[in-house]
Length: 480
Image (tube, rainbow, N blue to C red):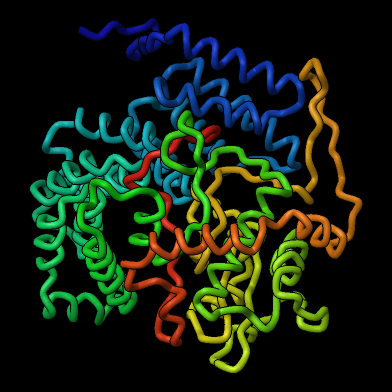
C-alpha cells in the first residue's frame, strides 16, 4: 500500500543509511571543509559501494560537485547534472546508467559498478511490457553489457562469464567483441578448452561479415587468438605468476616484481624506489639486452622526468653525449644498422596521439623501455620491457613530499641536481657486472619458452597493444 501526502503524491521513503556510510560522508565533508572538494568526492567512492540512493549520499555528492565546479571556475558539469536528475527521480534508471557508463568509459570500474547495478535493479523492477518500448530494451541491454565489461575490468571473470551467457540467452546472441572477451575470460581462468571452443565460434565467414563494417575487429580477433596461443607456452596456466601473465596479455617483459609477501600479486602499490633500486633494475635490463646482442647505439628519452633514466643507461654502455637526446617523431625506424633505446620514466609519458601512432608499430631500430608501468589504468602502449608495475610511483629525482612529524603538513622537496649528475651518482651504485649478468640469466630462463615477445618481433608487422587493466593476478589498490 502506498501512502499519499497532502499534495496527493506518494510519500517517498528515505532509504536507511548505515553507520559506516554516515562516517564516510562526515569524513568527506571534513576534507571538503579544508578546501579539497575533489579529494572529498574521491572519498565518497567508498560510500557508493553501499548506497547510491539515499538523500544523504546524493545530496552530499551534489554539494561537493558544486564546490568543485566553483573552485574550477565552471558553472556545471555532466556529473552534477546526472546526480541532480537522480535527486529528482530516484526510480529513473537512465541517469544511473549514464553515470555508470561515464565512469566505465573513464576506466573507473569501481565507481561504475554500483551505478550500473542500480540501473539494472530499477529496470528489473519494471513490468515486462515496458520493454516493448525499443528505447527501454536498448537501455537494459546496454546496462547489462557495460556491467559485464565492468566486472571484467575488476577481474571477476567467473561473474563476467555468467553475465555474458545471460546476455546471450536474453537477447538471442552476442556481438563478436563480446565472444572474444568471453574467450579471453576463459583463458585468464586457465580454462583453455572452453576458451578455444568459444574462439572457434567465430567462423571465417562471420569474421568477414563483421570486418567489412568494422575493419579493426580483425586485429582484435588475431590478438585474442595470439593470446590463447601464448598460454600454450606454459605447462599449467594455474601456476603462472605475474611475469608470465604479463607476457601472455601483452608480449612484454617485466624485470622486477614486488617481493613483499604482505602485498599479494607481485605488483607495487605506492612505490618510492631508492637510487640503488633504480640502478639494480637498469643494470639487469642492460645486461639482459647485452646477452641478446641488443646493446643500443643511442639513447632517447620521452617525458618530463625521463632524461636521467636515458643518461643512466648511457653510463652502462658508455655512450657518447652526442647520441643521447630527446625522442622525435620518426625515430622509430626500420634501420637495422642503428638501435635506439627509448626510455620512459613512466608508461603514461606517451600522451600525444602523433607519438602513439609513431611508436605503435614495433620496428627493428627501436626498443621501448618504461621504468614504471602504471597498471591500474589502461596505457596506450605496452613497452617492450618494463622495470616494475606500480599504481603510484615517485622516482628518486622527482619532487617528493616530506611529511611533518605530526602528519598535518607536507613540504615539497625539489630535485636540484642536473640529469647528468643524477645519472652519474646512480650509476655509481650499479651492481657488479657479474651480479647483473647472473640476474639477467635468471630472467632469460624465465622467458626462455616465450615465443612471441615484442622484443623478438620488431619486424614492422607487430603492433604494440594497449596495456589491459584486468589480470588473473590480483593485487590490492588504494584510492579509486
